[in-house]
Image: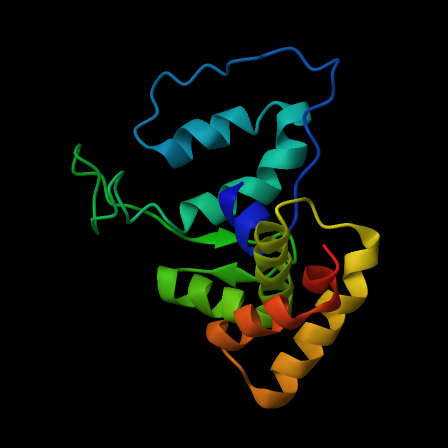
Amino acid sequence: MYVLEKLLGYTPPPPPPDVPAIEPDIRGTLTLRDQLEKHREIPTCNECHRKIDPLGFAFEHFDAIGHWRDQYSSRTPIDVSGRLPSGKSFYDFSQFKQLLIDQEAQINRCLAEKLMAYALGREIEIGDRPSIDAILRELQKSEGGLRDLITRIVMSDSFGTN
C-alpha cells in the first residue's frame, strides 16, 4: 500500500462494505508470502491483494528496521519475486527497482503533488493541476532534481496565490 500510495500516487479503493473480516486458515504456513497466498484464496480478498502483495514481496529482504536478510529466522529462504498488475515480472529487488525506474514520470508526478500539498498546507485541488503540469514539463526539459522541484513549487502560481 505504501508503494502504491506514496510512490505511484494510487490509492486502492477500500474493501467493499459487505465483505466481512475473514481470516484465512494459515496453519502450515512458514512465510508471509505463504500466509498471503492463503488469504488470496478468498475471491473477494484476491481482487485487491493480487495488486498489493507483489509490491510488498519485493521488500521482504528488509527486516522491520531495514537490515538486509537472505532468510527468515526459521532459516526459510526469502522469495521476493512477483508479478505486477501490468504483467511485468521481477525475480529480485534489483529488477523490481528497475520496474519502478521505468515509471519515472508517474513517480515524479506523485512526488510533485505530495510536495505541493505539503507546501500549500492543504490537499491538491483541480486548480493546482496546471501549476503541477508546468513544473513537471520544466523539470523534464532541464533534467532537474529535487532542489529544482522545490524551487519551482515555491515559484508556482498555486504557491503564490495560496
